[in-house]
Length: 302
Ligand code: GDP
Ligand code: MG
Image (cartoon, rainbow, N blue to C red; front, top):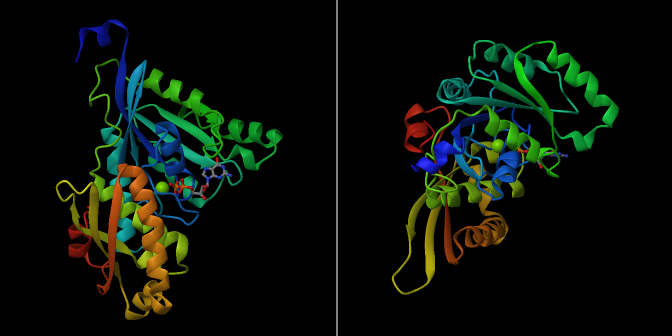
């Protein structure tokens, strides 16, 4: 920490990005950071882990948590995620709640609203996806949420296009407490590269398969090494599914599906690491891993 930071009113602190699955949290996180660290999918609930992103701004250091979607559900797996999301509120300086302009009111949002009533930290309401609605629809949404008197500010944005994102960033910085940098300036995330690689592989499974397959999938990186003097990263990863039938689909006819997953994931991992990558993928059946607490823990989801 430098005395310089204090003198200039430098800000630093933690921001939780919350919102129903598909609200655009990962898109916003990547947009705020200017780098791709969270995976994005048009299907709900691709983000299972909390992702920490760090934005180093001239006026402050904003540390962002991308939380799993908060929503009601019976499955044990989802309960764990709700629990994680609620626990996150307590650890942060600002809560930033994303809703979607084209579906501002729904049961999930009502539920989140309830959980927010007990939060003592400032809460920002972000209305995302404004590119999808006519401008005149925005004011009524903003007014109806303003009546709740929970929100410090209400900010319309398009995470996809970047509209309003600068304004959001400066509002976030304003709400953070004064303080020195908490992480080194060149750090973008605290997640290890092998985790990011696993996330990118999982994203490709989401992109390329359908129905229950993506939700039945977990990716474990078994091996992540850079043989000396070779200038290449060797990655071996296992894609876990719940049933033999899912395994067959993931591998595909003559292995085409798995090859395509591997090819597209490798390209992005190479971009992320800035080096050549040799990626080897395996598919393994691990029965009912989602219902099995032990397995969830082992995979690092808790
Ligand atoms: P998350 O589940 O909250 O992390 O949501 P994602 O960031 O994965 O986004 C879900 C979907 O919404 C993806 O298809 C995004 O491309 C899309 N999306 C996110 N932000 C916007 C936006 O501002 N405008 C539009 N049109 N789509 C968006
Ligand atoms: Mg996400």
